[in-house]
Image (cartoon, rainbow over all chains, first blue to last red; front, top):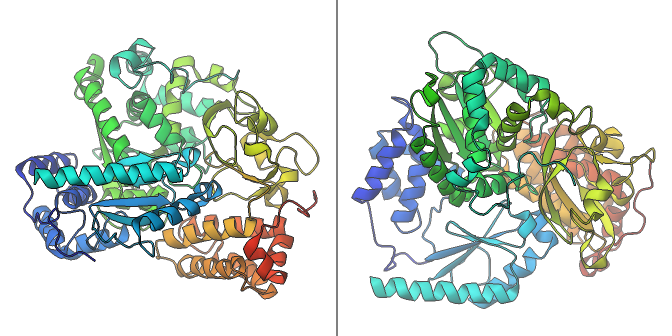
Length: 180
Length: 446
């Protein structure tokens, strides 16, 4: 597991831009019901603070919403989208549920493991770029097999298409690194 | 060619944008409702249309609306359930992604009917890219005077917001959804009180599926009388079907309810048959929670009648020889698919998604997953098959929400129709690891 990564070093507080977004979200709910904004704020926090929720991040969000830290922990641990440990820069989440399995998701998972040189789902490639995960039905059954990376759905996967994707994300990573 | 009410303009370039949507008759239902109808008249029109909830349970939408409590001085909420997570179902995503203004229009007309001045769309967190599309469309609707204060000079105000979940199937259950929308874990609430009395923030709330809310648009536009002429006597209107699995042309289709299952699977306009020239082995017609049908019960019922895509025909024969329309998640299996493996896969899904609140579901789904894993991996024995049935009975009906039932029914149905295939896995453990049982000896028609 990578603990400190050059692209994952940003820590609370939020940027000014994110704070504006946080306030916009809070304003969508009635007075005293600002906790409703929690899940969306956790998504923003995860994106801004290196792709996972550290305790420091969660405590910061609790403070921001003026709720108890445990109220954040219990939500962060309930919902599967939140990473509670550091991940690679890009997380490939391959759908493993029935309809995807019928058209070859198992083979896609195996292929990614081989290409990234990792032995099991949940691991991160040695270069720290990719983490492979599986997920339950992502609502792309008619365009299966598929994987999600960030906000993007990659559908109608084949081994060749996966190879291409890996190359694309590697290039994106190199670009990010140059910018930093 | 079936009549299209929701996807009529889906192929028009730019239909995602406000201008194109408006030029194709968009927002007419809002004009009609706010200018010529009282809220109560809109509710009555939807009741008359006999629209059944399109999320899966099939509860009449108009009746649900009529239950909404209206105490003085307390806000009421309409919440759209866009948490679509039932395996095999992707129609709501398609609708929101391709024609987002249809949902927004439906939300405005429906919120007006219910007297809600703030409404929320709760969308599964994985659909974050769809959330962006919806927020863009909502901004367009505000800019053009369809949302905000005094809409069309009617004196009616409405604010509309979108909130994401964080990845939890259970949040499709309406009270778990409300918990999640309040920023909590998605644990379903005890009922009563029902959301119609005590829902979001303790206020009266209606929770409706994306497709149900979208269907309000054509119902108001053409009127309930006209809507009732589409579909069958007991299943009015059209339905979005998400077709997946081993089909030549999977995807989302809008059908008139009452289309024959055979036509849907093999018709040129629809799925065009089984991929790679193979034979059909089984079909789950309404999302992973509904009973699986073996090949001899898909296009015909147990009594030999034609099976149709409708609430009544798909459930013909009850659970013994029928299934349910459910969410319209239509999953097709070819002859090479292993029923045991697939049943295990879905059991793993439910074990993963159980919220853990009720022990029969929390423990039972985990047990089923483990027993099925054993059977699938050549380590099972005959008693395991009976054990699965026992676990089923102990979950069913013993939990706060229907996830337990949803986990139990598919396993029960798979054993009911494919017991020999399960037994073959026990008697031929080594062979079962290397090849599939195939098509033979599927249970005869009852």
